[in-house]
Image (cartoon, rainbow, N blue to C red; front, top):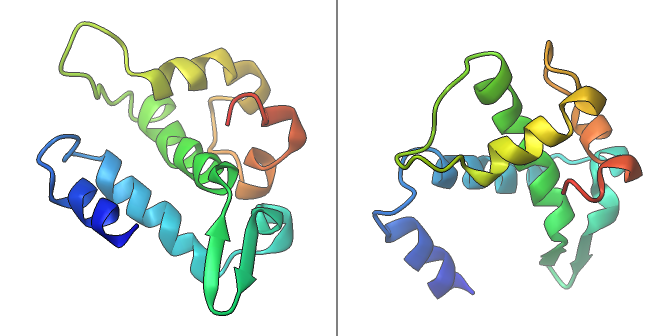
Length: 114
């Protein structure tokens, strides 16, 4: 697992924001609370097992203001990036004026989005 993690971070692809955003999502393991996805984190013998819903909820939350507040264009190709398509699909439920909370992003109603 550590070798895969290192390979991902050493790769020059996706260097602009995906890697720091993933790192930021994983850093949330340091102070998560139950209603913010804590049910997706299991600790056994000093080993964390993290469901991808935990990471996806945070990843989508971090990209929300990039898309709706700053209108940042992330794509280097004419195709839209998947995370923006997902956010736009759920924009009515999430709202576009303010960033949803971690608690909101972890709600069951957004399980398909994650």
